[in-house]
Structures are given as structure tokens and as C-alpha cells.
Length: 331
Image (cartoon, rainbow, N blue to C red; front, side):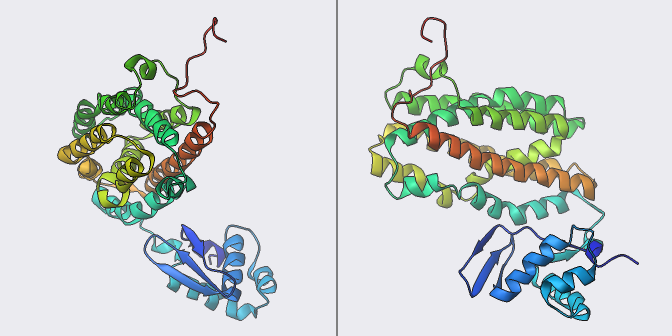
């Protein structure tokens, strides 16, 4: 008979809010509220599940009669904080996987854009310099699509998926020119931007996409889908551009090319590409599905770290903008 601990796993909690007395735990599909005592118990169960300790150990740690422990764990499962391992499907179709992904995408995007940089910029505590730095790194990342998108075509083995990935590349390869236009309207020359050096995390984000393309075409495609996700709900993410223009004197001519790029993504229906790819996937084993989702969430974490690197570098007034290459004469 399987042990109690082996029967359950924890669901991902994206945010914990509240103070002592009541805690709100935000999952991808609900918010679960716990009292302080229940929250403490939940944390102990969360730590216990992957361990090799028995129910008696957990009972002592909870200060709960051993016979009541299974009932408490069952209550956590009914609340949505835990799930039963046996209830997880062993395989799923591509479209079933897409439904799972769609259910968590908003939570992922909220996590990616929870970095304090965004609140800082929207509240007026940012600067034109920070906006410019972010735009420079966006230019570099978009240009670096030419380093990872061809790999995604090369490593796609099924012809329909290879064709979809190639079509996406053909539509995206030169979109960095939109950000070049924006930067030229901020007073930079084309050579200043083209010869500049991206931040380490900008390169790391591109290299992560390259690694995903080599590992599994669906892992790459879910990362691409996360990046395209902000075009689905433009009202949520696009106020940043107009607000920055208002707060920091960014000329409209520098904002217009960004919107042109977003409009093109919508026109090409890039946010639907992942679903189109998954229509050609008849079956995904549970292990592969988990690995694909893990790549998608790692991409979210890369976005957060990328934002951190942008803020840390460009807020320092003595750091050059854009970043020049090292050379023998200068350095």
C-alpha cells in the first residue's frame, strides 16, 4: 500500500498575501484563505510530503492526533492546495496540454511582471534613462531571435511543426528594426545601437531559448508562447508605453514603432501559434508535459531576472548608455 506522503503533491502557489490572522494563497485558478494555524500546518505538510518521514513524525510536528492527519491532508486536497498523484493523467493530447497551459498563463505573466521596476516606472519614480535602457535591451533580445529561431526550425522533426516554426521566423526575423526606429527617435544613431553590447541577462535569455530549441521543440514553443502572451491582453501590458511617454517626456515618435510591432504580432496571430503547433501532437506523456511546463516557467523567471539586470545597470548614472564594446584603445 502506498504511503500517505507518496499519494499527494503540492500545487504551485504564486503569491501569499495577508498578515497574521489570515493568509491568502493565490493558485493559478483560485485563491485559498487559511487561518494562521492552518497556514502553519500547511507549511509543515508541504515540507513533509517530499521527505521520507512517516505520519507519526508529521503528527508530532503538527501537534495533531495521528488519526486526524489524513483528514487534514484530504481537506487541503479539496481546497486545491494539494493534488492526488493518481488523479494526474498519464498522457494527454496536444490540445489538452494547451488548455492546461492557457489556465496558468495569466499567473505566469503576473509573476514575470511583478518586478518592482514596473511599479516604479508607472508611478513616476522611474526615468527616461530607465525606459531607454529597457528599450535598448528589447532591441538586442529581438535581434537575437536570429540566434534561436533558426535552431527551432532545425530541431523540429515533424514537417507541419517545422513549417509553422519556419513561418514564424520568416515573420519575425527583422522586427528588431522597430526598436531601432524608436531608439533613433530618442536621439541615438544606428551605429551606436547596432555596435552596442547587450546586458548579460539579455544574452542569458536568448541562450535559454537556444537551449530549449535543442532540448524539445515544444519546450521552445511554450517559451515563445509566454513571450507572445502579452499581445493577447494589450490593455493590461500596454499602458506602460503611454504612461512612460507622459511621465518621462518620451516623444510619441519613439512609442509609435513599438505599437506598430505589437499590431503586426496581432495581425500574424502569433499568440495562436502554440495551439497551432499542438494540434499536430497526438499524445504527450506526463513526464514530457511536466518538462515542457518547467521550461515555460523557467522562461518566466528569466524575464524577472532580465528586468532586474536592466534596472540595476541603467539606474546608475555613470554607466554608459548604450553599452560600448571593449576595445584595446579605449580600455
